Image (cartoon, rainbow, N blue to C red; front, side, top):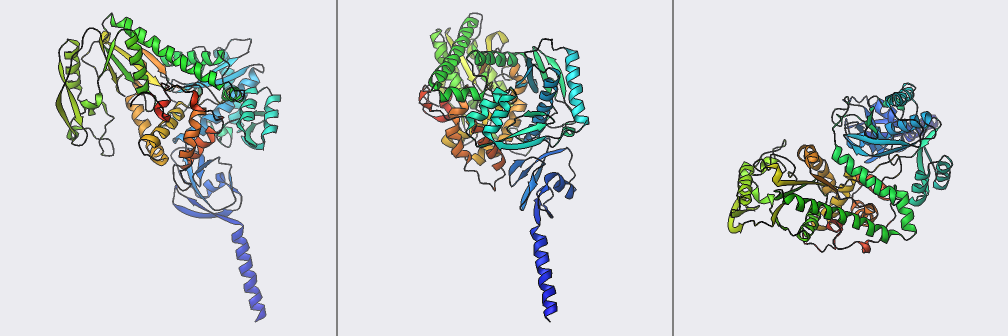
Length: 574
């Protein structure tokens, strides 16, 4: 009897011990559960589920937090494996590619410095400085050959976490002062960096496990630097096409020159200026630079008005600050003896039952054809002939256009100012000759970088603005804004970005100090996203990103600042 009890007790103990050495993983891709030994990596967990994907898996969301594939599970987890087609997956791939590029450049040009500066032409613009030779096609081929060596050897990216003071010391000793200052001023006790052979680098997100994951890219000569080409976002077996963007390139170049002259190339430089009490001056210079740019645009319009310009068209993606830009431009136009008059595209919507539908069957209000293009052009033509028109008003409750007796007639000093996402689309004003139009593209083209290898995505700039504005003025939660962002971006890709080079001028609405000012507003909003929400991964990423910026007091922001459109306190009425 006792013998049987001993056997049962031992069996139960062994079973419990065996279970305690296992973790249960819920794979949401297959909605299935499996047990794995404690400490199993995501790479082996992926193999264990025999998951078949169309494109490579490059990272995973573990309990709705993005983790690298070498992450080891020591407790039960819910895991979603992320393919290259997802934004998070593409960021991981591109970071890893950038490390390969940085290592190759450092080995071929030991005295050189690589700057990965900004997105352009659906790739990333890079410069190599402090070298005696010229970067030509032969140099490009040498760099690519080095990168291919790393890929063929499937070199491992090794993440290392150490005390920040030690990481700062290591980067400083290796000549990476930009990374040293960034981490030194971030206030974090520990920092994670990456090793690739005997090379080290820092990235604010995870990398792929090894160089063998990088199987498609290209490097081209581009203007006075290089263009790093990356996989197509929707079909990553192909490269993104090279889209010529000379106007966009020149805007970036001008602003980078400005930052370099005032000594604020990277976030670490900004943090040091903040710690030294210099931010009031930085804000004043930044605001003055923008106002000077707006004044110059107004002067161009005034000059062109003598040659027939009567219509100013303003376009740009979501949260670019188009409305505040328009109001400030109108002030400057009046200084130039012009009378700006606004014409709202919202009043030219077609009746609701004629609105085109999107792929999900809902009304597509962002479509150009949600507007009554013939009627809009008819009214414009009449106005430009000096005739009086009756302005429509769109009733959003009934979904019908109405007329309430509002009239408009232009005189010789009047100029129409029209703001809307379709402003640069030639089909919007197809009945108006080009010589009568002045087209402006507005966007937050972020030029300050975290360090020389970590640029800041322009979309993050606009997303943070939108999060704050949606929460403060539209009663939307962070989850609401984050969940809609992909749809917003899809509309921009279709209706805005293809036409941005049609602009006569481009206005960069990004402020060099912006993220430091937005941080105190964005953090409480993002912190409300629960760990159980799908949007937690993006909220967590943005919160981590904001920690690089030291807080600043926004009392120095003037009431006409473009940022006031989002954080409040503007003297303009919206």
